[in-house]
Image 1 (cartoon, rainbow, N blue to C red):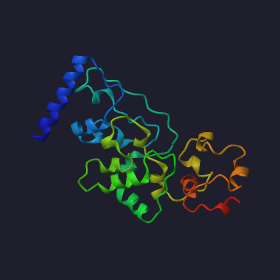
Image 2 (cartoon, rainbow, N blue to C red):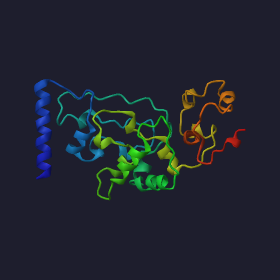
Image 3 (cartoon, rainbow, N blue to C red):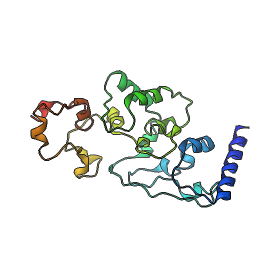
Image 4 (cartoon, rainbow, N blue to C red):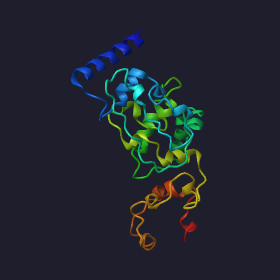
Length: 223
């Protein structure tokens, strides 16, 4: 019965799209589509075999044409991470318990630029159960199940990575995952940053430094 209702809803949306001559232009509601297809892999068909960050894992047009007459498939975003294996990470299942454990032990470090505040993320992850659909995807792609518009919040943040990847030797280890370049430095790291931040007048939050410099970061490691 549930499947029948989903198909009827899909056909209703398709009829509306055909009537209006609309297509899959932004805004795009993941919340709506997850109610119709349930599994992320239904649309992101290549994700299970993706071993490179450069793979285009966005839905192909064929995944949309069942409901949409003229789907608009977006181009992949420009990546700043060069090394990532979706296939390997999917095999781990949900990492929500690991993130929650890190939060409980105060070893989860978020920064002011994170799209999802730690408190909101903790609430999301605590709602997961063994039966939560797509928990393996949603534990890294935060808030997708409730998203009405694509945003940065849907992409994994570095604090999530640091839950498991704890060895950081900044700046030498950055290029193991990231493309090299000035984009790796926060806007605050101007040429005179070394002099300015040592004055004690910048009100620096060490927790925000940890996101790039690692959990074992100490000021004396540089000075």
